[in-house]
Image (tube, rainbow, N blue to C red; front, side, top):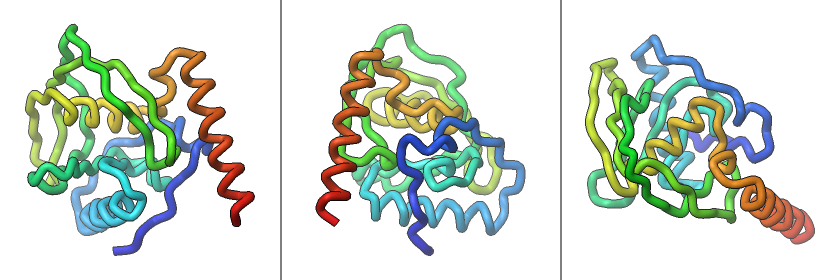
Length: 170
């Protein structure tokens, strides 16, 4: 159950679409465990295979809401509401910065569980936001691409400043 290195923005692999999982085996289960351990160590509430350089469509989310860890393999948004909601978003690949992103308030998502069984459900609230955020990452869409150019530039400048300060402190 190792904590894996997380790719840090602007690593180009964060812009590559992940491939579908076709083998539901022990290796997939180990990847899911590693993702949970890595997410908790970051810390974060969601992480994908691409965040650790594994370009497979696997997501784990733990909102700390008592439900525990949720696993989504090959998730896709089947439909989305026209109503929108705004939430603060950030990334384990861009630690220390966040900004408000507007997304559909409700989504119907299809996915497979770790055994390969097909599932689907409707989600709203913060979980709907988290799923859309992580599915975007699986599609090679890093969260800041959902911001206006001005807000994106501000986030990148804040992150660059944090990175420089960390390096100066080392």
